[in-house]
Image: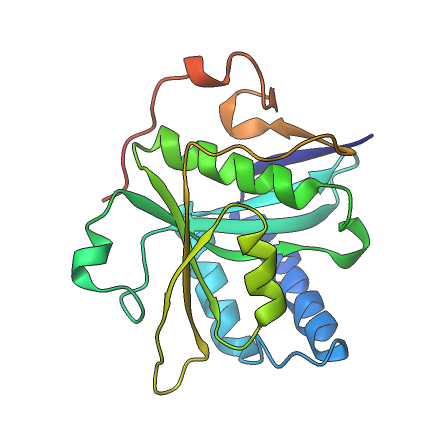
Length: 203
């Protein structure tokens, strides 16, 4: 079993997270998927999220960062004002380095994202992803997300909207063990997970 650690990203992590982004771009391109091609724009977004505390990094026992994700407010380019009023957190830039896929880490991190969503007082974990990446759509559908709708944007290729109940936990037997340093270094999930006080809801 491999042990991973999740914590809030800090400014010193910017380059490591951007390297993950570049790795994901190259992997997608090699797989014939035209996605995440606006590198400069993506880098600015990631740096902004790290600055506001919305990004988290996943590392190995030796401190090597091999994954990241961001939890933030909804994107008004795709979600209507009425939808944005719903009690939800939104998952962005969910990246796991390709040599660490297949261990169940992704499933654990989606459960952890739901847990963070609940702690913030929300009912739904939501995301938008590229409209034509049907493989990614299936990945999320297989993990408890519901496809709500698909919307177009004049310059952005995302717009397939999904949500999953924040109370849902689906990770089963796997080879990934997650230590949550945002909650005092507890193993996730743990029996004490629900005993933590709720985080303040994002506004």
